[in-house]
Image (cartoon, rainbow, N blue to C red):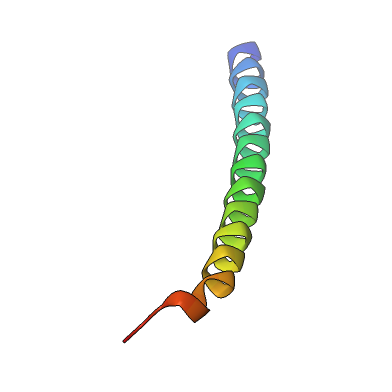
Amino acid sequence: MERVYRRMKHSGAYNVTLGVILIVFGITMGVLTIVNGGKLLRTRKEILF
């Protein structure tokens, strides 16, 4: 029974760690997307068709 609790503890720790990593990654990607969108909007006058 103790093995089950230990495994649940490790699984919970991994899930929390993965959640934090995914939140940081999502925020980083969101900021990069906003910055790149701003650059595209700034340079749209230079595009010739």
